[in-house]
Each structure stands twice: as structure tokens, then as C-alpha cells.
Length: 247
Image 1 (cartoon, helix red, strand yellow):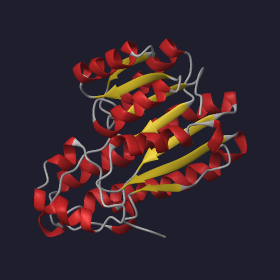
Image 2 (cartoon, helix red, strand yellow):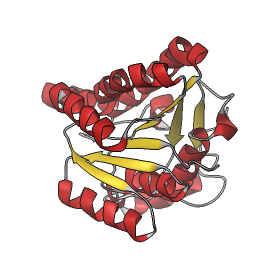
Image 3 (cartoon, one colour):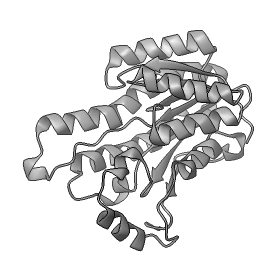
């Protein structure tokens, strides 16, 4: 799964799954544009990649802001020459039961988790069409398939990503551009580390493989979908959940 000569842009690359994806893609030979809000954290990731002989550039951006998204993609293409691989990973949670959820919390999650992917995809379509090659990978969630109590906004945004993925796959497939989604289950990240130990213990009981997933598990799947080995896969949702959800 050699990605030498390819250029990837990863949103939410400052930590967790996004960081792991960026490091993995760089390890496979791709130059990586790192995008997230925190420039300081992005610089740390860029240094980590450089220390291993890879190439990475950091771009601070609020992916929910259309103007910022446009500027960052222009800057990334100007610096790295092109974008072959887009990983839409940026995401937030604002958990609350529907009856108590504030409109602002709904809007923030939809904007960051779903609308941002739409905005980023728009920026890479023309370049990918011209080069007749592209990989678009959206990080959704098991809860986009099952729903989750207290996460109506998050689950809706992740379900929306699945619909977006399939639509883009149909629109761009004839030009050798694939669009797929990765749906992680329970993954050990900063976001999940805030959950109680009892919650984690209960979660593990529902996972046939008997363990919580790692960010590496997700990154490996993203690297595969970004490669030539996945050239005949598009419109697919790859579940990385240890068997927590089957079918």
C-alpha cells in the first residue's frame, strides 16, 4: 500500500484518529497537509512525521467556516502541489437528550461533523477531476448506523456522512475517484477517555473481539482505502468495531 508521490489532507489531524491517520499516511510515503484548529498541536504532529523522514505541513482552520476552508485548500495545493487523498475526520460532540438539547449544540455538531466534509469535498473535486484520480474518505461512526441515546446531533451528523459518501461515490466514480467511509466503534481516544470505567466495561462486553479499538486500527483502514489496492471499492462503509455491530 505504497503512497509515495501522493498528497493527503487530513482534517482534525491534531489528535486522536486524525493524528493517527496523518502519521500512517506519511509512513506510507504520502506528503500530508495537517488541518485543525490548534496550530500548536499540528506543529507537534508535523515534527513527529518529519522525525520519521516524512513530509507534513500544518494549516490552522475552523472547518465549519467556509471562507477558512477555501483559503486552507488553496494554501495546501500551493505548497504541496496537489491533493490526491482527502480524509474528513474533524468532529465534535455536544451530548444531551433531545428534549434538553439546545439548538446551538445541534448546529455546532452538524456544522463541524457534516457540513465541513461537504465544504472540503467541494474544494478537491476540480483538482481530482483534472488528474482523474482521487480518494475521499469520511470518518463516520457506528452511531451513524445505530443511533445513540444523548447523541442525536452526533448520530445524525454521522448518518449524514454515510449518505454523502454514497452520493459522492456515484457522482465521481466514472473519473476514477472513490469515496468511502470508515465507521469506528468504541475507540480509545481523548474523547472516549472522559467516559466512566463502568461505561467502558459495558462496552467491551458488547465487542466480540473483547477489546476497545485503537486509533491505529482506524488508521490502517484509512491507509488501505487510500491505496491502489482499494481501487475497486467505492460507496462503501468499512466498519472498524471489533464485531460490535455486524451486517
